[in-house]
Length: 124
Image (cartoon, rainbow, N blue to C red; front, top):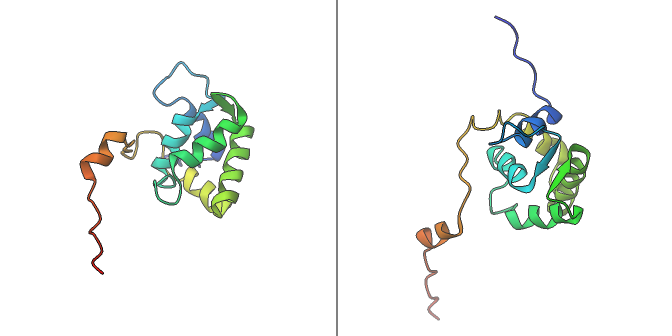
């Protein structure tokens, strides 16, 4: 048996940039694909990091797709803003597996209402 090739950040970027569309060349990534990757790596959890956080930083580039170098800049800024360890986040992104190996649930706004539980009124 041959040894499995070690995953790299740029290799993972390429794979996730092609997510759901094999005709893409993998040189640029969209916000949706980037968020999907972060969800699969268990980074985007809607608690510490939300889709609003990633959307605001992604839109600073004023493009619908960004290159690997721009994405690294985006990731670095996200880690700075959220006070996260960049090396640990990169390691999580590298080791999360190829797209689709782990089930990823992309929440829809309707899901909030299906699971909403009102807070109990405080009695004084």
